[in-house]
Length: 233
Image (cartoon, rainbow, N blue to C red; front, side, top):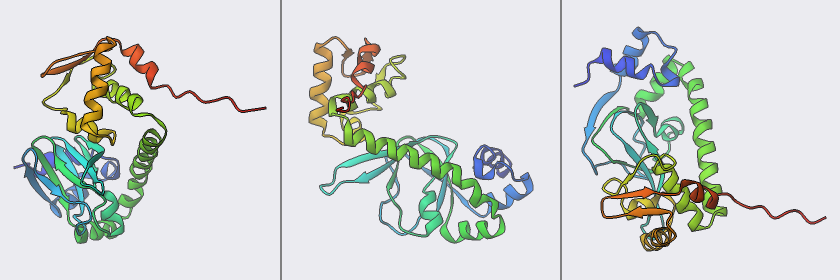
């Protein structure tokens, strides 16, 4: 089990809690609970009743939106130490997405009533959430722009660069399956496989069943640049 003193130090790394004294933070963390989730376990489901505010202390969580035909779209990847499901915690509505443990996870959770009580006792916490909400909104706008205006080939190139740290590391396929890569950019596994095959033939990547290696990151990057037609006089 996490000791509360250690948990307090982890929570101080998160903006809404960073300015509180250790005494006040101890009150906040004691109002919540810590739970562990194994790989593949669903933490909460989209459209289910409000699960409350969560803070990921260890592991990795993927946030999904489900399409009308059951397809999975990854909206965000959460890594320690960061909060998630803050929208539902604030407005009291249903969970906006589904959270799944991508690795073994340890999560601190304040249920909706506990979170609202915390806001009443520590109103500055609400103000501290504003920068996080603004950042998440910008990320969603950027993702919407990519999905709306980039062809799939460009989206795959950008995804490969992001997953490989711009070609610095190999992509391990046990962590990034074809299905997961498709979920990142809202396309189908068949399309991902075809484009990866094209990139292999063009000498941009090298891949086998274990890894994908970026051979020419500069050329991949050039594929991600959106050309804008000049305005007519």
